[in-house]
Length: 372
Image 1 (spheres, one colour):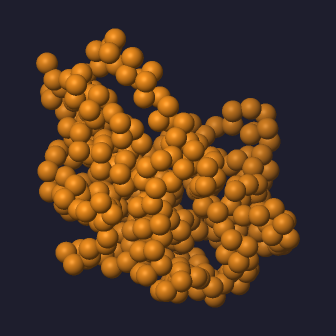
Image 2 (spheres, helix red, strand yellow; image 1 turned 120 degrees about the horizontal axis):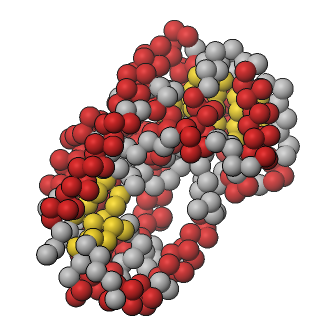
């Protein structure tokens, strides 16, 4: 759901209002399994009483979630967990530690913290399903299973289909025709596609640095700006002959699949990374929150993209650091290693049969292990 980040706690509070009607439904139904995420912290005692098997579904990467579990969700930790990187290869920068702690440890308008929700949910489920595959995250999946002491079932990357993003009405078709006409006019692999998802809110300073960094890079760009990404005043003040700022919905998969797109400047959310690599499009990663920084590290290790350099203490980035990262991926010689590795990765991410096999095995697991 595309809502600003500061409204999300109220969405969770509204979701908690489903407890009573859901209990009534479960009492009169006979489900074999319940699959749910971190939000319904009140479900475990209910499903336990009713004898219903449960699986926690994680939409994060296995790498990101195993790190979160280690530092936040372990039931053996104290009431307000702190970071423990002593047994981890990952070293967070100062600004990342501060962001993680503020975003997840603190009680919010919903009445409870995200950490508490996940702790309660994980304590009462029979297994964990994670949006991952062993071809990319075998080590992280194994590590996560050791942490949870419960079955961890990879369900594949669930790559979306291009057919799902066909125009739904005349306005969508009209918009796509406009976008397609512009993309067709650009040279092959010359365009930087820019999108930061629906939850990221850019400050005016961040917006300006990104805009100037794109101009400095020298490449044409197509930048999708959701209403909540930045303030109307600053977004309306930028004009560029080199690129396009687009404020409506776009068929992201169609854009990433276009031959003129040579790189994706992204917040490195797991879904966006999967969509980009599905078409072998290399990444320029500018993470802002949640597991995005961890995904960026994982993708850098796989050599399918590069992370924009930030100040270690305050997390600020500059137009120069952004332009440097863009040129590293987009220039012909410098970008070849990233393009080659992204193309190899697309053979895994875009393999529909492979990921359908994961789904089939997940269903089979539930059929075998459901309670009598």
